Image 1 (tube, rainbow, N blue to C red):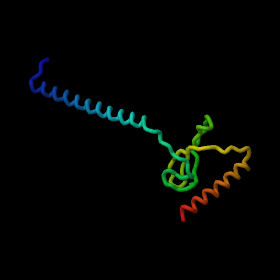
Image 2: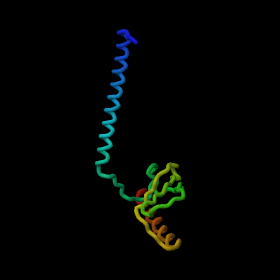
Image 3: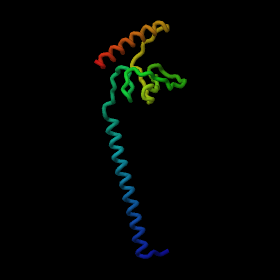
Length: 127
């Protein structure tokens, strides 16, 4: 098969355009790899535990609904998947510690103390 000069020019132009697209994709891949490497070598993000606040709407101690499915695993790795009753956004709560008791009565006493603590936080924020 023989090509005319015009057809050869068109094929060469298409080849050059394809090579340019490949070069841009490779450059973008290199940039993304460099960014991922930078993220991997940064200090890990730390979040300090605080009061029970929705990370989306900022409401203090909102009513939440659990999205938990049955599951199992080490207690230290358990998380809660919750839906905020104020903004309907789903978020993950990571317990920062555990208070373990043998009875519901003991648990109720602990929760009463937390309620009063949260009330004092709420009162100081509105003042």
